[in-house]
Amino acid sequence: MFETSKDILNLLLGVSVFMLALWLSWIFYQIGKTLQSVNKMMSGFNKAADAFTELINKIKEKTNSAGAYLSVLLKGGQQIMEMIKNKKATKNSRKKTDSKK
Image 1 (cartoon, rainbow, N blue to C red):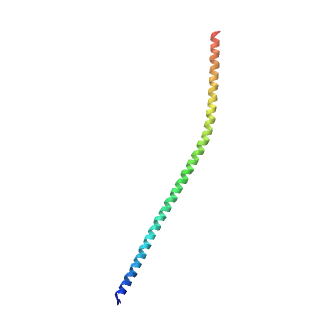
Image 2 (cartoon, rainbow, N blue to C red; image 1 turned 90 degrees about the vertical axis):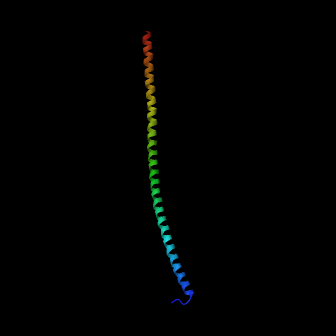
Image 3 (cartoon, rainbow, N blue to C red; image 1 turned 135 degrees about the horizontal axis):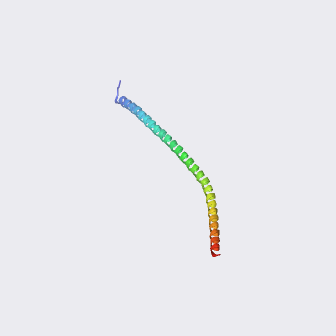
């Protein structure tokens, strides 16, 4: 079967190349699995970021509309307070003039 040491060397080289091919295949498989899990994780992060952005936009819309209503209510409240102050001032001035008579 083996006539010279060159035959043994060729056999060992063949086995070594085969083992190297198996090892590289396993390494590439593991790298592929890792990249696949990273891809899934990144898509999950993207979905979470999109949901968070949507939530922020909804909150902005609500606060903008609430801010518009709040400004209207504040202006109305200021006018009501001015009217009350004016009425109190006129009542106080009437009482002062009535008490002087």
